Amino acid sequence: MTFAIEARGLVKSFPGMEHPALDHVSLSVPEGGMLAITGPSGSGKSTALYAMAGLIGLEAGSVSVQGKTPRGRADWARLRARKIGLVFQDDWLLPTLSAVQNVEMPMIGVERSASARIARAQAALAEVGLSAHAERNPAGLSGGERQRVAIARALANRPAILLADEPTGELDTANSTRVVELLKGLNAAGTTVVIVTHDPDVAAQCGREVHIVDGKLEEMA
Amino acid sequence: MTLSGLALRNLTHRPWRSGLTLLGVVLAIASYIALVGLVRGIEGTLLESFSARGTDVILTEAGAADVLSSVIPEELAGDVREVDGIAAASPELGRMTTIGEATTSFVVGWAPGAFSFEALRLVTGRFPEARDRAGDVAGGIALGARLAERLELGEGDRVELFAAPFVVTGTYDTDALMGRNGAIGLLSDVQAQTYRDGQATSVVAKLEDDLDELERDAVLAELEARFPDLSVDATEEMVQEYVNLRIANILAWVVSTVAVVSAGLAVLNTMAMAVNERRGEIAIMGAVGWPRGRVIRVLMLEGAWLTIAGSALGVATGVAIAWIVAGSPAVEGFVEPVIDAGLILRALALGLGIGLVGAYVPAARAASEDPAAILRGK
Ligand SMILES: Nc1ncnc2c1ncn2[C@@H]1O[C@H](COP(=O)(O)OP(=O)(O)OP(=O)(O)O)[C@@H](O)[C@H]1O
Ligand SMILES: [Mg+2]
Figure 1 (spheres, chains in turn blue, orange):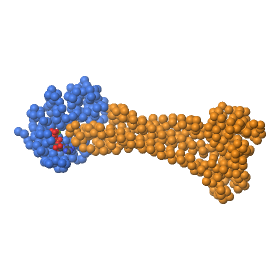
Figure 2: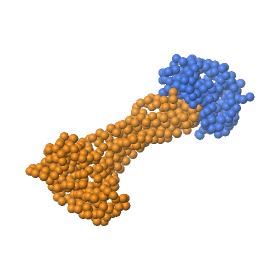
Figure 3: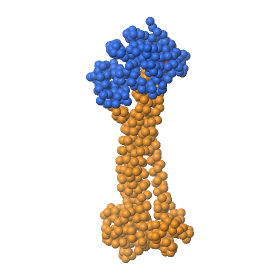
Figure 4: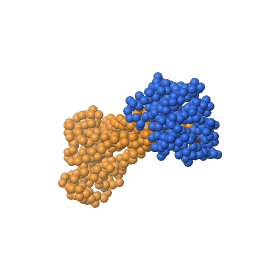
């Protein structure tokens, strides 16, 4: 069986910490799975997620994506552009660009035709229910809307894998629910989804939950 | 949306900061263009003032700082004429003085029949003669065409010169800017009015036409041997050794270097601030899969936009400043700025270089940062 993501023995420590942020973490996520990573603050959830996207240099261990192990920065950049979508707690939209241009951004260098890029960006915005706000700048959108634009951006290149770091952390209940429904919908359509969350309700809606404490991973029943 | 469009948006998003940086670049490029253009103009003016007269060699007092501070006896011209290879030689007394309302005009006194007259084209009237000095008139004076125009004077008019009344005998034209803005009197009249009887500032000489390089050098060496108290200069070298010009050159170089370096620092500072403020944006570019090179390119495009616009405006401003300075009363008639395509291209390249280097350093640093540390949370 090939996994969407397979992490083996990840070790990562930061200076000044008593124990490693990741302490021999191994984790496999099957294609089409939906996984929640939970744990106390500072336990290493985000670090584990970023390691799966190649955003962090590891001391030991390796990560494979769809059976292949990327080598080096450029390899990982290519993977993130084509296979892995990322959503963060903050939306990180570029303030100078409209919603649709923000969604277009990841497609630069992937899709050559500008009109195709715009059409796909519009389609991604439609998927998150924001077609009407396509031309607005981030400053003119609510927090929930901005996070949905960020999800549309993560979907721009139709990634097989979506990694989300507390995507509902900054949102109220209504907006949270909406975002979680969105992610569930994407998973139902075949996208592998990994969510870092503090929210037990969110975790409960995922097919599987793993818990990290002090950099060590444990499977939840 | 394109990469350069994104860069442009980032600049217009912060109009004040971009505007001030732009101004820094404009000033740097403008001062570079204006200063270098003016100094080249002065150089050209001096060179043509000799070469347009057919003067090959100029003999002045050894050690004098420039032509006008040299004092030598006029009889030396006769001795110079004796040297083999010299076709003609005549004494010349030059003064920088006020003619009517034109301050700092170059007036020379020439002996009647001096070979220098041959290089001038009479426009009206005639050149001064000894008989012009009569009654209360101190002498005749011929005006360069441009000076006559500026002073609105013509043949027969009277004009105050060396605090004495002179009569305008005619006007002449020449290829030399300084000549067009100067005036010519008789050597004896200029000597009389400046308390320099029997004196000249220089002896100018013309070599025989058929000399080759070696023979020319031999003539110069012979002159040096015969007149150890004089400084013997071929006119071209003379211009290059002109002390005031050397100072002007150094000043122009220093001022424009300071301007260019400070513009470079301004761009560097702006870009460093812009990059620092946008670490999150830069991190997200990496997170969505942009390769490092593309991230750096966007940031460098910002610097490029800023400096291309700044350099273009700077060139226009510099050209305008140079001409305004050249037209100001204090220096009118001495300098015409020499600003050619080469100088403009160099200024543009300099400007673009400032932008690219200024943008590259912070961009490369920012693009190397670990995006995870920034994206983890605000
Ligand atoms: N770039 C960094 N430099 C130094 N220490 C870091 C860095 N990134 C993470 N850490 C430390 O590593 C540990 C794990 O961090 P991580 O962000 O993975 O925790 P988390 O489980 O996501 O916490 P939270 O729920 O608060 O987001 C923490 O102690 C954190 O302070
Ligand atoms: Mg976290």
